[in-house]
Length: 270
View 1: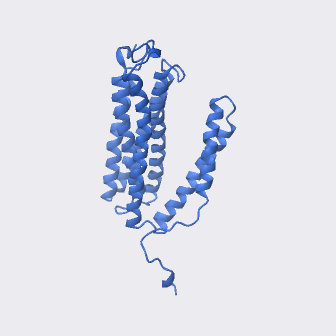
View 2: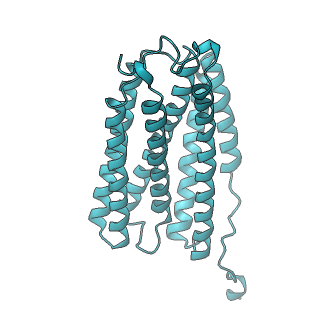
View 3: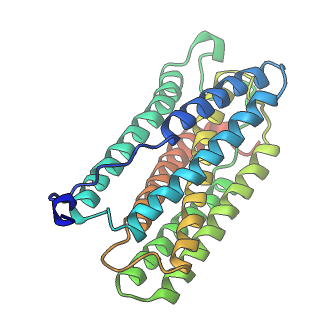
């Protein structure tokens, strides 16, 4: 009788979950709260949205970890589907950044009268690309090597190397965020100071948000690795985090080359 109820296929039919609808409401509150906050109408809805989003992430990830690690639902065919899903998610993120690059290149390659017919616009003092931006580039490139080290250590069964590589990657991610925050605090222009500042902060700011998300992703992986959740043949959660981190690395290289370096113009560092 028990065999008649056993799975006869390698797929995972997910149990009903409240987190999709709760997450939708929380993210809607977060988006509306951001709009209210930026228009000076208080931060109460923003705080509710943030708390609701973080709570949903925590509980939903808990359920996924339980399904993957303890209930054995993530069979090889399920993991393959998740790899396709992660690849498509990263592809959608690429197109997200294409929008910011498109806006930047449209204005830089075809300067308007409003910018004085030049790019960067007249009066804009850009960052020296080989100061803090270059330092942050070295930080991210180094973090890409350390997360790869951690991945290879995991595959070879080296738990100590996995934890060390993850810990260093996390510290480098936090350092990158701190350096970018310092850079923003010393910018010679504000977000509302024109098209240059708007495109600059939207592109680099959203990348910074992705670095923070990726760092949280890696922190979760660190504690999962500490608890022994990952095995050499079964560690998609770590693999997805590594893919995401490499995506963050590549986007930054484009930002550094196109916006900080090529787009700096003769005013860089002045």
